[in-house]
View 1 (cartoon, one colour):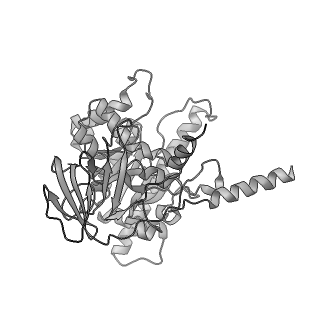
View 2 (cartoon, rainbow, N blue to C red):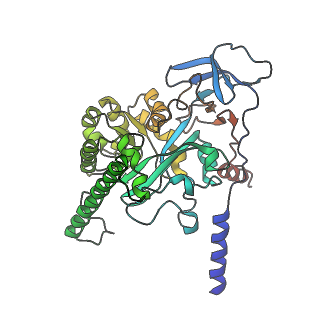
View 3 (cartoon, rainbow, N blue to C red):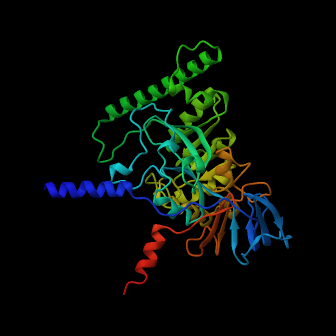
Amino acid sequence: MKKLVLAAMAATVTLSAAAHDIVPGEAQQHPIVLQGGTLFTITDGVKADTDLLLLDGKISAIGQDLEVPSNAQVIDVSGKHIYPSVIALDTTLGLTEIEAVRATEDSNEAGDITPEVSGHVAFNPDSEVIPTIRYNGVTHAQIVPQGELIAGRSSLLQLDGWTYEDMGERLNVGVHVNWPRVGISTSWWESRSPEEQRKANAEARKNLERAFVQAKAYYDAKQAGELEGTDLRWEAMLGLFDGSSTLFVHANDQRQIEEAMELTSEYGFNWVLMGARDAWRIAEQLANAEVRVVYGAPYGLPTRHDEGFDQAFATPAALAAAGVDFAISYPGYWDVRNLPFAAGNAVAYGLDKDAALEAITLAPAKFMGVDNVVGSLEVGKQATVVVSAGDLLDPIGQKVEMMFIEGRLVDLNNRHLQLYNKYKQKP
């Protein structure tokens, strides 16, 4: 038994210390011309047989038959599809490696109210998972701390670099709130009585409201110069009250969403609804209130017995039809690689293809406050570009062949590809 315990401990240490051996790309040294590709610009339509000039980490020119600088590297991308940065929202990339191994799980902080937590601090840039995500075209990810009521602040990172400082696109974008439950669970694992659940739900709601009241009082005192000490929790929430920070509210049930709309309206927060499984039920209301939505259940099962089997798949089209400003996410870590396919699946269930592309590129960039630098192919923006031999949203046709992040050529090698090549040769 002792030997088994020691062996298990050794295995855990080995797993927790594991890291990929892929070297981050070098800064762009010379001009790069991608010649003759089909550009999905997002903001200016689809441009066939068009060149893209990357210079000093930015998009310098877009057009047909561009003049090639004398020292440029010319890459023929005829017949290939060129896309801007694909941005994955609501992920725990770099915070979780193997869920079953506690030493590789660093996404949660102890306590119900922890807004001072920053997701990027615990981020592991050497995670074996990250290269597998890049391989499907994802260049950026929002790193979100998990927790109870107020979980902490998220950051947007590029998915190539040595440290979070290298990879930071925008740090501490906003504070994440997990809206308290509103219903009664009848699941087999729920041991509490209905009355106990109602009491717990009411207490959680009260604690959340109390936190906002205290944070606002702290903000007012600081504005008036009357603070006597510093509280890191409320310091982290200051930006919510002056509009410099975003409140990300995770809520799925219609009742949760409506409660969140009421509270955020009271405070005038700049906010984004995350998860939003029931958003289709109040799509018109969300559109009228100009609520930004990150739909995070693109492959979910029906929530209720009377819902259609395809409700999760059809929700993005319903949001678009109602005029909701939305993005599509695939929460988690390793399965984030399926984000482009989730957008493609939404197209199969009624969403316009251009809208689907925007929902994983420019819309997330807007929600994260970085649409001036990423999210579309425009002159002056970052030279963050994905080159695919086929449709990025098609799991059959997609084949990402090149990726540039700020002009750096990213190594697309990854653990999954290595295993595929290995076992392809097995007799």
